Length: 223
Ligand SMILES: *[C@@H]1O[C@H](CO)[C@@H](O)[C@H](O)[C@H]1NC(C)=O
Ligand SMILES: *[C@@H]1O[C@H](CO)[C@@H](O)[C@H](O)[C@H]1NC(C)=O
Ligand SMILES: *[C@@H]1O[C@H](CO)[C@@H](O)[C@H](O)[C@H]1NC(C)=O
Image (cartoon, rainbow, N blue to C red):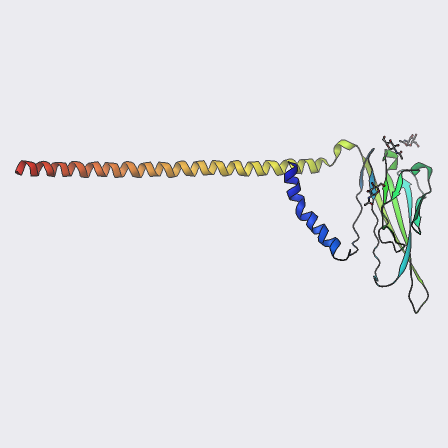
């Protein structure tokens, strides 16, 4: 089962490898939105720098609004390669998962440990970028992304994904079974046709043989 999965994932892996070899082009992938309770979860937030050649620095702030709250609360901030958790609810549970060893951030993702149902809500990721042009004053841009996170119980680990996997095996096995049935059917049909032909030719042979026997008899009689 796992071998099949590996085989299926191989092209994806190659694609990812190719993407990373192509000088790590920045792609703004949307974050997952379903977090499993008690597990870790990566809050993804990528903001690509539009002008790759312009030197820049960026800081990232994360805010959170729980399901029944009306206002956002700052929960995490990352600047100058230092991250800080700003809300007691997330104390020791948030870790930087974004761009490393640079202040020119493009990936502002964070990793949340031990997800609880209380983590359900909207997360706001804010990129504050300072672009430095040689000829003009620094230019500031702000990019905001909202991510709505739903916390789900562990078992429903995508019922859809389990179902589709089962359907995949059913269709593979079903197709092979059908192939075997078809082969047996064809083989028997061919065999039957062969037998029929054999019987026919045998009958013909017998007919000829008896005829020639008659002839022979005739010849014998004549002798
Ligand atoms: C997360 O859960 C594990 C296992 O239940 C526990 O050992 C760990 O201390 C928890 N970490 C945090 C930051 O709550
Ligand atoms: C994200 O952070 C978690 C927890 O610190 C770590 O286990 C994981 O490897 C990190 N992933 C990336 C891509 O940095
Ligand atoms: C979730 O929030 C409720 C109400 O604020 C609190 O009583 C409860 O202890 C929290 N649960 C967890 C796992 O933090």
